[in-house]
Length: 231
Length: 243
Image (cartoon, rainbow over all chains, first blue to last red; front, side):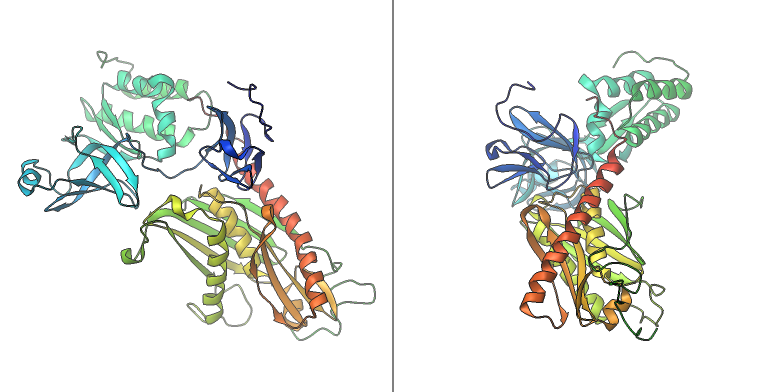
């Protein structure tokens, strides 16, 4: 809750801060996008500074995707090895699924080029490890697109409001990977196209207000306002 | 152009009319390119540079990637039309050296451990050279890194001080660099008073060096202020997201 912390801060809520800017005198509560030095907290990125869970955080305007345990991501199988798979998660990120048994590797039926929806177990010095205990879902069809990972929260919207709007108006199934990969699967090419256009609009205008209304207007223009049965 | 009779006249004015402790007109703009992750355009008088950053992305060649952090690549290059004399095509020894010193400066502030196995590629192109190209380039590269969202401990601000006609001057132009007695580029991460790049061509006494450093710091403080302003201006139209 804002305003209830004793620690002194040198910024106002939602103020734009730049790298190196002093944020607070209390080095113990440094959160994402900040770093602590000499008992003080400084911004590490350009973004909005705020206080969350008693920590000073900087929400960056642009940030590359950083794999975190529990994240669901979409990737493309890039290599099949005797002891597992390598999955391309975008940019320099490669996830590995370790399956020590060669027969089991073959029995998954996964091949290079397959698109999969997987969960990250951990990310560290040994690379990005994919959780193989949760289902590795191969995505059979649809359009695979990529947007900037930082825009994913805006695409989903508060409590899923934005993404559900798109799904509802186009009738498309949309699988969202936190790494910025999406798969759109719809009843017709027009519906899929409309969903892609909406997603691209959100990516471009994520920082503006009134976006939800503009997205709804665009979708109604493209698919004629016909609503699919709720998904 | 051959050496002017005097680099500083009897009124203390330099060849371009400036006082010894005066910076040239500076212009900074962040986010000038669409294809790179971050970019910046910086002018110090007649010196114009553009910097672009890509990253984190896959390291090329792959075997140079490090398991625990990103590698930072930097290419400082002068375009063929940036100088009057014929500039050899490709990378000269000087450009290779400046690429290295700029890279080493940026490595001190960037949090490379956030992106294991990745590369961050920094490109600095000098489109017009009038002295102080490496300091302008480093100033621009630092803005471009921030624009790209690469986490950093601080921005880097840089300027060259020199000695002309026996006097210490701030922000050398090309004539002063060519015909003066000393040229000292200085770069700092001002937050913690850290010097991240320091070179010297020519001769200075220890006392001159100390005064030169203090003069550089004055210029750097102003450049740092302009950098922060340029960054905030770029992102000022963004409203907090509604998530």
